[in-house]
Length: 138
Image (cartoon, rainbow, N blue to C red; front, side, top):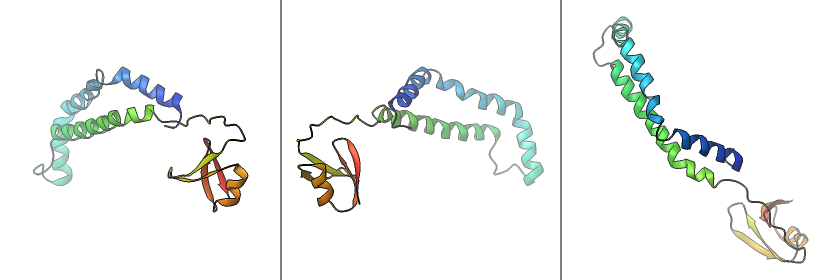
């Protein structure tokens, strides 16, 4: 989906509304819930494990969840600008009598040809890109 500029632009628009001003708000529900169930959490540990020693408390669990959520948010924030540049560039109109360079899928130029027919006759079987378009040599 990152290949579609409209999708990337919408994600960036929504992200700009949320980050960083509203992101802090998402952590509070963890704390609110754990404050309410903290005692039950500890009793549950004793019930199921026979002890609460060595087990994480409700507040420690909040810290763990918050830590991982913050890391995921920061990863997303660091990678979002890359998505703004994603997309397929439109093919360039090239006159038919112009030579063109053919590239493999790794972006390495594999040859310059007078025509598509010459490229098809010369190149080994594979998938190539020329003039902004993919083509297959069988």
